[in-house]
Length: 446
Image (cartoon, rainbow, N blue to C red; front, side):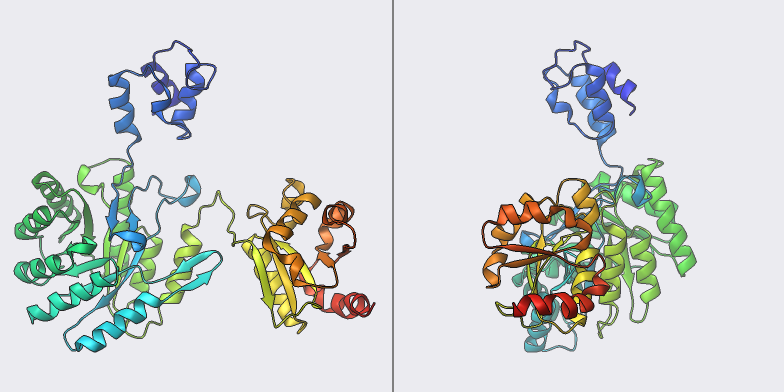
């Protein structure tokens, strides 16, 4: 709704109790999504109902799993990231067939997957969950589902039969699993009844989009609270088309059956299918990849697409040891903008000179931008170095700052206190080698 449309629903008393001088100003903030209607104490029930429906995300949310590994999908509001932002990145779950695995092998594999943790540019990559194939031996499926749930991993049940799926859902109920019926044909009503009785999310499918929206509406009408859509596109072009049409139709509220996140299966060797899914709005992707070679590229691709364009990509402030530094090694300062950190760290390591790299909190801004915004002043850098314990790392009481912010050197020296010295380093990280050779070598010998 526009600001004027919202304004007409407000009491128009200009009481200022919402914190804004006029109802129109408050309405404009509501339209921009920067305020909540609850701040207006005099809003009518009619206004609450109208604004609540208008502000609800066009794609409903679904939560997978419980606890600290739970993930949320859906609730998206835009087609292109730069329009606002993507709310949730797609969950990447790993397909597992327990048919040929012993209990020990199954447990070992799940432990390995649960332990995966790769940190890149401030984000931790890990396996988001396990998509468990229903085996012919029902007892194996039950044991596997219980093992997944015991490790706190979100569980997706890839069903082959209603009875087998029911047994696996019961065994993994601690993780509130997602139920996925067979991928061919139209979703059987028996799976809908199972999802309703178990109160779990359900994936629905049909041969074409018309059938898909129809079965989604039927499942929602039967009482399934959380739904995902699985298109049955046969090739990449058709998949690209279907995923795009589902997202566009949901955002334009063309049909209520489209207002759900999308589930996608990826078979062995189908990296291209996974790439299309990640880039074109699939919300939950189940990947069959025994070798694991596709995961790091997909995690990286997902990170590059789903970072918020309104927030700089940043890393946690801290003191990083490059090489094996001691108390006589250089102490470098930089900001927590990810690209800046990785450039400086890479170039510094390349010199072969062990050093301490203090990454201070500049709200994710690069060096010059942070300085211009007042986020990299002498006082702030000194405070950051103390909070990080960086000053305790060295005995020479010397700090090296980026050449582009030489202007803060005097202020920083004053803020650090008597006995501390500030040296202006090179403007470009690629010149650190020459700096260590020509400047730092003299300082360290003094």
